[in-house]
Length: 167
Figure 1 (cartoon, rainbow, N blue to C red):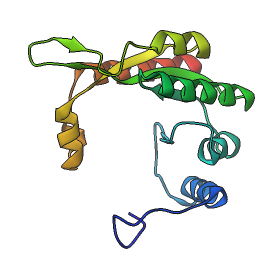
Figure 2 (figure 1 turned 30 degrees about the vertical axis):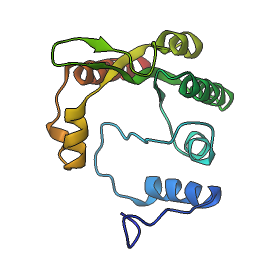
Figure 3 (figure 1 turned 45 degrees about the vertical axis):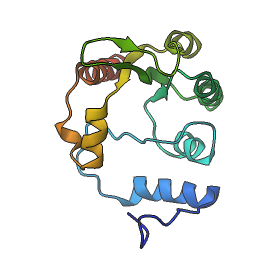
């Protein structure tokens, strides 16, 4: 959205990323918001550090997937959040399973590590989200707001209830 061609890479070093995050927060008129969610790449890079150190963050939602490598990276992120005195309010396990039209459930990326992340973070598991080709199609068509699935309703409800408890 910021570059001339959508295939152009965004080649920014840490200070540019940090400045952009701060500018989005301070210079954009967001209007009246109930929540402002900042979606960041996984890990312990400049982007999450900037958000934790520069923005008034009420809580962090940790998102992972079942793969051991993803879990390892998220564990590092949990430790960084703790070190920077952030509050983890919930855990979401994305791509936790795939369900066939017949209702068969497959853990394509291996068994869940959600309980390990819950134990490590001390925060509740807000949802385990499936891989859903319908969601993919709607996202690609720019119509994600049309998507409905029970797992996402559970996530929304748990998210709102968790924030009510934290306030």
